[in-house]
Length: 240
Image (tube, rainbow, N blue to C red; front, top):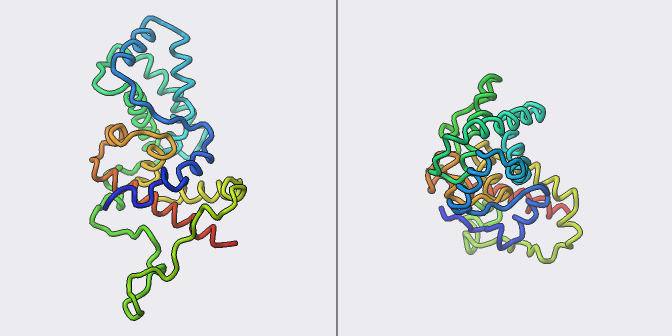
């Protein structure tokens, strides 16, 4: 299954999703030398370096923590515990991953541990949507002509051109709410991957490293998540 059949970058859907999360930051692949300089500053007690790090990642960490923990108050506790863990673990940072990936790995480990206490934890690799052999259409089957019709497999009607939709409606709070609902309703693995890739802007390699999944699984999960969100938006825009 090929990623990008309906790429958000080409349709504007990614921009729509990011409108729902105004604090989102696009990830940048930080050079290891810059990581090491920042770590040294943190080890030396540079308060401004720590404040800058918190400003950069805190909002994203809270959003990701809430993937595992539904209570915002508890998620905020997990994020605070993570920052404490970062400060305590600086001497153990060896540069084998980016500083960002290292921080978020501490976060996910703590969030999963907290979720286990509440009986909410599910092993990521055991999620049903991890089965790459299960087909999932990118477009609703009823959009195509059936085998008993002329030109089977062809479009019943071509998809609507989103350029024709007024910008005011595309950027409306109602549309953004539908995007949020579509993402919230995704299976767990798909939701986490689309949040990391299309909301937080993580590159595929960092996403795979953080979640401990292969590139192939990441591509499948992302494609399925994008397809479901697109279908939800297609249905919504038809309700005019």
